[in-house]
Length: 426
Image (cartoon, rainbow, N blue to C red; front, side, top):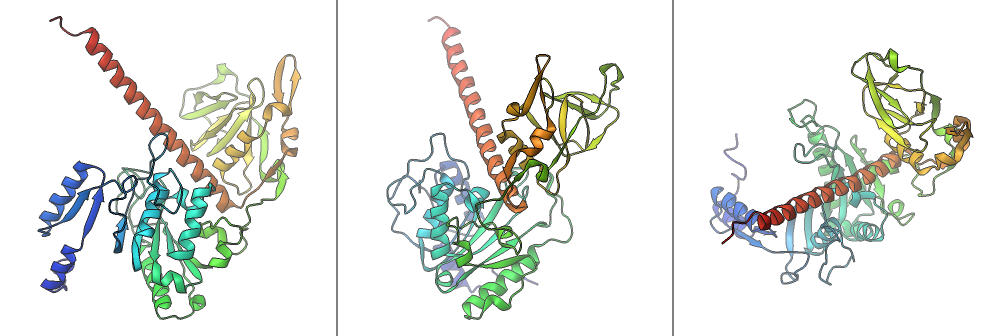
């Protein structure tokens, strides 16, 4: 039995390791906490300093053999104003941090970086250039983590980028792994659960990296928790998309999606009659053209559901997360998603000018579901639908964060004003 992690290291090796651990943080409080933590764990001379890696280039020429990082995902309003030495021109913190780490590895350097999903598939130029640089120079594997694995602190969907500069130069492929069970429930409590994917993913990742080091063909490997994709396929459309599921056989990798009629994607149906005098209080939401209009003891459809206005208010689209609900007759609801992602269907309907599909009767606009079914829409594969949803949810999280910052700033302004008005006269 091992006494403690690292107990097989000789004293001289432990001393050398301790002398070569370096850390940067922009927050003086985090620096102090890190220093104390290292002292308590037997590091007498920790090298953790206050440093802004994105706007200062004083330490730009330093390189490292191993970098482990969980960099900040959020960018301040207006973006970052970085110094000019980055190879990728960007204002997003997650792009700049990954670029910084990749550029500051030694020629044989390795890194493990936790990144938000935007790095994996967002289509802006900076993201594509970053992925291209990683694929060509340092990336060897991508591990997809389940949304919620960082609860209760964050529910953001993340992945781990595995970099190895020497292996990447000789490899013509990248391994993709997907973890659905990390050994803990994905709720706020994160209780331990059985059948973790981590041991198997670790085993398969080790096998892949070992094959690269020994210059063996990886075509003989058949990972059960992922797949191996050639760099040629990743570069095919210029996107360098790092979502492994996109490259599974039978899933299109092109960014040009087929145009189909909406009726091939979903089936819309008119909601059910429910006079207000018949409502009986209960747990199930009643959903009309403007969203939830009440609750009822009975239900007609299982959730999740997508509902839009049929008469009166046309154009608003509502996602219903409840287990069961009652779509009101003032609405059209999706009766059959035909295997498509409900959240993506909501996005699709929001992008259609539903008002133009309605008829004007008795001064009340109404939406004809047959007209809606005939509208032609793009239909990405399910994996891409989920990527689009994740990207949009990331932007929504940013909006929520900015709104919170605005409210906090307004509260501070109010306190300053109150201080002026309520100050004691001298």
